[in-house]
Image 1: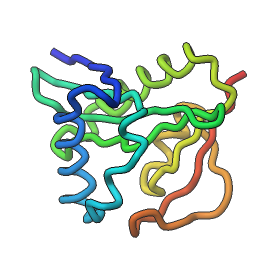
Image 2: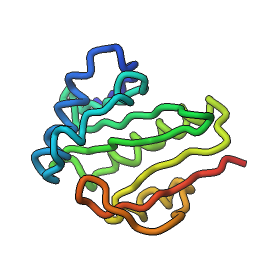
Image 3: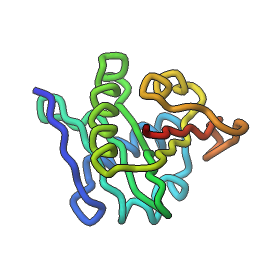
Length: 142
């Protein structure tokens, strides 16, 4: 059974942090001091479970009237099975309920096409974040 939990930054983020540690720190070699930041405390975190096993996560937060999606990760053995789409569909539904004027993602270049499917457009030049190539992407609700 697939289940999605929504957790505020003051809640128990153990599962979200475990997934991020596995994907970003262990797999992608992101330095731990770059993975954890002040936004975790104010963000709404989403944790996706399959048969009670935490398999995916992402966070969203608002700053200066702009909503940001970040730290989206699906554990390696669950990728390519539609879980990322399920997670992002739910995040977009949540964000649209907030009536945003703009949603921003700093996306790894290897997954730009994934976010394009949700209406995000690339803007600006490629840049390095934690040693990984990224591009800023924006979604402008109509």
